[in-house]
Image 1 (cartoon, each protein chain N blue to C red):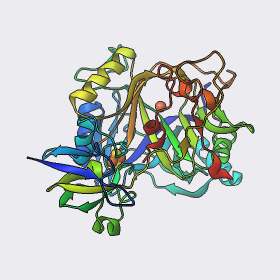
Image 2: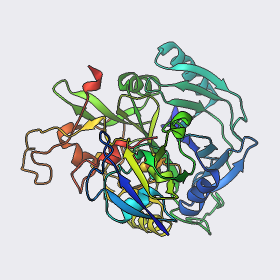
Image 3: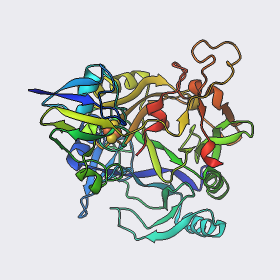
Length: 310
Length: 134
Ligand code: FES
Ligand SMILES: [Fe+2]
């Protein structure tokens, strides 16, 4: 197996203010599928082409933002090794084990907090509920897809202060590759890092800001630019709060649109990008070209896009 | 049925400008009314009560709100008239002060025009304000 260690972003757990409105947004508008509710009132969802039981967890409370992000690793042996490596590295805090089945159909999770204040989890087991099609002689998508219907949860962009140690943790301990970075000022300070555990342009990205644990967006994958435009239609048809798009990123080359869930958590649906093998040179952007790096067509920074987080 | 919202200055409590007043329909929140009429004055973010950039203080008039993030408006503030404009529904005409800010962490610095004379960003290249690290 060539892809080992951390396999993919497996779930994102979001805080919402109004569960009913959130379920409508994530299922009817976005087209995710509800797979479970638990006795705490949490709702578990997945995108249609994900085989694992869930990739989005919603929890109703009195604030918005991200509770944690979970990563699937290739085996229990790897899970244990990472837990030990993370502890020895001193690069994370609040280490703990979450018992199996605290999430439905999910094995035990190793939880830690990065130096940017984000709670992350690693786990090796989650039930395979399938993508609505057989694995023998399947069709290409199932019947009855609704809304934007992205095929998978793809990545998150997060804001926090100590980017250096968070990069160290993801790259040196968890084996991620840096694909792109933004540098600023005469000392070329890295102010943003895009990192992958696979060969996507990013599985997680961070922006250096004077805060801890802030959430910029969770992103979901569409097939093509036409689907991004269709998502834009659905955003207007359903009176969803639009942030920006449809447009194109310079960084990662994604074709994209951003909008907000009913609690103000930003969502993205996007298509495109490139394949990044681990030996691909890192792409570097400077802060004076940041407009083009972020929005390739506008070539201007958008204050709300950069400043609004939960 | 609609109500008029007037944005008053932070310091003097007087209307800050002619345009800083707009009608809000009974079925829409204050921020939506402002945006629908193409008015400005209150920063617009998530429109979902989560980010806090549209925070205002109501200084005169009656209103009700729906659920707002506690990270943005504390329970004490709530009793002092603070609210998120995107969760704020006027019951009478209102006078409000703008409290929320957009983009404190990111500032636009005047940098030299980028090579190749990019007409969109020339002379106005945005930069990240990293002064908070010093
Ligand atoms: S615009 Fe985000 S809380 Fe009102
Ligand atoms: Fe993204």
